[in-house]
Every structure is written in structure tokens, then in C-alpha cells.
Length: 379
Image 1 (cartoon, one colour):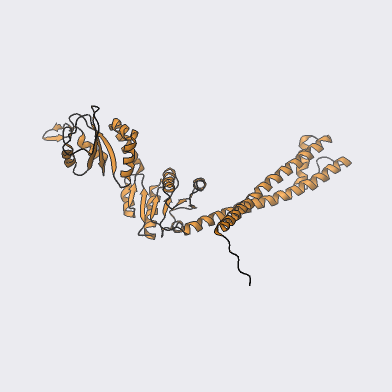
Image 2 (cartoon, one colour):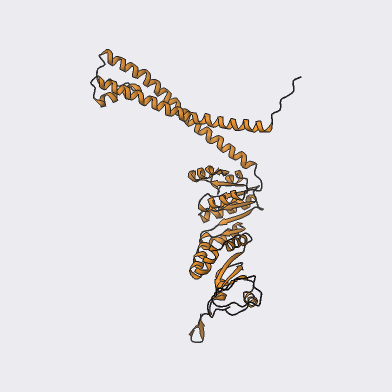
């Protein structure tokens, strides 16, 4: 009895790879055939036109005769074919030209069929890979923010799938090697095909607030346990997304406005953060746990100027924690300052905070002078 042969895993993998390469070559060969046939027909037309012109025909008459013959339209000859030379030229044009057009028609059919097969096989491979995902991330939209998010997820080796309906952006995602599906994420069927029931997180980052709300509602109904992070453009959309089921809402415009305001209000402090590798690393690590780092320039006669670190943190009521003081006089910076260290005018205070930087910075700012209107002081 003949024993079945076993194939080593390495050879099996190489076999599958060769099969994939062969399939790609089969799908690409019709394009090469089409180009070759077009070149052949063009050469036949050029030679036939030149041959008629050699018999004394004008260029337009010669070209017209060649087109009539090759496309077998059946109109009458523009000039009489009354010499053996013209008979030979016409017969050659019929045989070679008609054969070329038959081949051209067949090549076009092959190209269209190959494109459809390639698209079908490509979608099939993608769908098969998505069906095997579990605990993955779904990114809805591959715009500017979606592309940045996908890049970071790929760098961190997190399993994810991109949902995009735009052909150009979908092709861009495929070219980058991302797992992606074509479709509108507002359609529940598309979300189900992306494995929303098995996913751990869904990030909807479309620039359309209404679409993000609808996607959030659909995803929450399909998977009550999924974590949903939604993008919002208008500040009023945040509450709608929360009510729709989003766990977290990101407002890119609001974040950008805060950054610009910090640059305007504290230009020296922002330069300190951006130019220091240590501060950049601190900012990234704190951001991963929902905290933020900021630098406040201490003004003369400020609300906390002259106060100790412990007193400033008590007056902040838990809004911030002072982790570093950059002295204005060129003295060595104080890391993890003790509660008794005093904050002086001109210092740059590095704070770790949860919440608005503007509220924390307001405590360091000088008190506003009130404007008396009768018995009321307006600040």
C-alpha cells in the first residue's frame, strides 16, 4: 500500500506563493496581449495607408479606404481598385487588418474579464482575512485623520480594518498594505462584514457629524460591549455622540484651537515643550492615560506668584500637579519640586493636568481689575 506523501510547511507556503504569483501573471497577461495587438493593428494600418499613397492616392482617401477594409463596414471604395498592385494591397489589408480586429475584440473581452476576476479575488481575500479577525479595531473613513490613525495602529501592530467607500482612498489604503473593505460605514451590513460583533474598538473619524452619529448608533446596537471613539466637528455634536453610545469624543478643531491659543499666550513655554526631547516623551506618555502636560509662564503679580508649590496645588483643587520649575535667572531647573519651593516671577512651571489648560493657566494669571457699575463689579 502506497503511503501518502507529506509536504513540508515551508514547501507548502512556497507553493501557495508561486500559485499566487501565477494567478497575478495570468490576470496581467491580457493587458500585455492587448498592447501587442494594438501595436500590430497600428502597424498594418500605417503600412496599408502608405501602400495606397504609393499608388497616387491622397492621404485621407488612403486612410479612409484602410478603415473601411479593416472595420468591414461595407461601404464602396473611394477609388477604383483596378490594378494588380491595388488588388494585392487590398487583399493584404483585409487578411491582416480583419484578423487584427478579431484579436483586438478578444483581447478587450479578456481584459474586462480579468479586471473583474482580479477585483473579485481581491475582495474575497480581504473578506476571508476580516472573517478571521477577533478583538480588532475598525476604522471608519480613510481621510487625513483616518490615515494617521491607521499608520499608528500599524506601527503598534494592532489588528485593524479600514472601511472606506471612496475608490481613490481605498486604493491608497490597499497600496499601504492595510486590511480594508469597500463600503459605506453607515450601512449595518458593511459594519457586520467588518466584524463589528467581534471587534473591541470602533473609531469613526469621518468629517461628517451626522454620519458619525449614525455609525455610532448602529455599532452600539450591533455590539453593546464595543468601545466607540467618535470624531466631532461642531462642539454641539459631542453630546449627541455621547447619547448615541460613544465612549469618547474627539474634537480636532477644538484641540487645534487650544494648541494655537497656547502658542499665542505662552510662546516661550510652548517652545520649551517642543524643543525638549524629555518633555515630548513626557507629553506622549501622559496622553496615553488621559492626562496632559503644559507649561505656564509665571507673570509678575500673578495669582500664584510667590506662592509655594504646595499652596499652588491646593489652590488648584486637584486641577494640576507641578512636576518641574524652569528658573528665569538661569539657575538649574527644579525637578519634582518640594511643597515648600516658591514659584517666582519669570519661572516656567511644568504642570500635569486633567482638563482644560486654560483653567489651570488662569490661576497663575494676574487678577483682573474690576469695573464698577453702581454696586456691581464687572470683571
